[in-house]
Length: 93
Image (cartoon, rainbow, N blue to C red):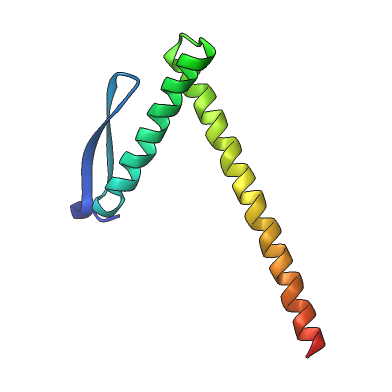
């Protein structure tokens, strides 16, 4: 990321403002991710009775990490199936 392409943005999560630097092209994605995180934290606090903001952030981060792990595992399984199919097709030719 080039310095002239960097942009400072402010994002509110759980009532606190946080400053981040990102490229101009990543700004909307970062804001969307932060809004999703903020909504998850609010839901966790509301639905589980968690009082601590830090605890809500921890639970949200574990949930997001788990979702990312499951998505990566799924991609790897699909890739393996594709590789197997390609190998089968090559052998058939």
